[in-house]
Length: 491
Ligand code: AMP
Ligand code: ZN
Image 1 (cartoon, rainbow, N blue to C red):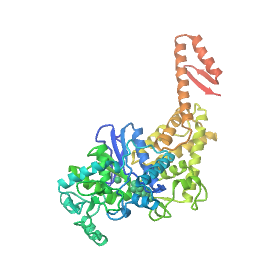
Image 2: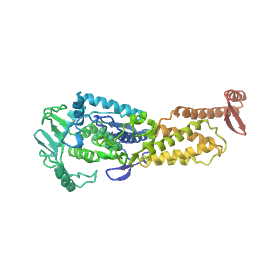
Image 3: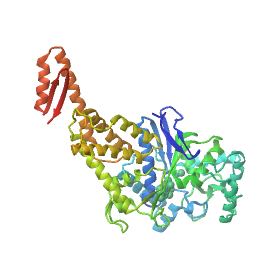
Image 4: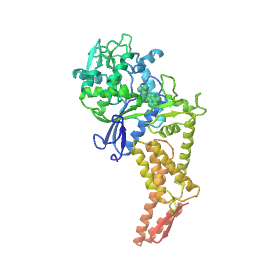
């Protein structure tokens, strides 16, 4: 299957054929949330996008190691090197321990993602649980000459690194331009150059989250955490690194620089960036207040929407857009998704009850399966997969309205594949999975019994063949012999 999967790699800005570093294995690292507040729907969009990706690899049969961290220290306000730690700030405001803040919002994050039916990662490391690993990496970067210490803090030397490497290759930034822009914005004195970034920061006496290190009592830089946790669990080179588009610079650019400064090798084969959820045309964001919590939408208790929407409808709404497109949240868009979702669910609920006929309807089931897989193989194109599901719905509804027939092959393919596409790949709960799976299994069992009976007849064991027919008849399944062929109908 992997021969066909193409992924848009942010590093090359091209769709590339996916080839794992180790056959049949895939290592994925996704930047997790900074747990200082409840996750908003924008954050959830990113995690749902990566859940879609994870589910597809799982479906293709890969052995996956999926790592998604929890950022519980070091992510400062405005993503800068100066300013307050987001978690410490909240802890001070609420007069509780920073770890209580982290715990509270980690629990909230898990609860929300569970409602969205996302599969938990295989490993969920915390930044505070990996301080020794980060200290080791800083030592290595210093040893290799790409960092310097000033007053107990350690900074990455971007200009020096750029002499032998390409800083800016992920975000397509020009270092000269960067120097020009950062100099005006940054008033810091400790750094040699304003575009350098902190690997370790000396803590002020009032700072709560701090650890001992060879340089000072302090705390690690945000970018370094992800380098430490990704390489610890996935190795110095791994297949996929993901996160929201807004993390490309500086966070991911700095991750590449750190790894290359340590090992001399490019750390990641495929960088995947998901696009932003906007609200009223602007990025959904905690800091600007332009955000909405999933719970507010599920409960309907908010001033922004006239009614509530279920987690399934929200997930469906998110997957109706490609993960690399901007998606705007509005009442109109949610109402349209709900209508589509209901139409889809209502048709697939009726599908198992359709009685297959001998006649074939105007629907090429084999082509339909191929087109559905093609859509996922084309950079996880969920909106195209959903439009293929609606093609199937159109056919199912025309059979229900007796405009055409559905034969056994069409019936079996639809009953088998629709739950796979909706439940397994899109991760949308329909509660119908069991029934339709059961029914397709029932059909296979009937076919098997027909086969057993024909063999008995061939061997002239008519007593046994009649017994099978009579017993099936008793449970409402009639067999009709037409020469060598046997068909059946269900009451
Ligand atoms: P944070 O908790 O700020 O570190 O963000 C967690 C994840 O949510 C990151 O991958 C961000 O890129 C992502 N994110 C933040 N805002 C949005 C948004 N409006 N739409 C989609 N993803 C977002
Ligand atoms: Zn990260």
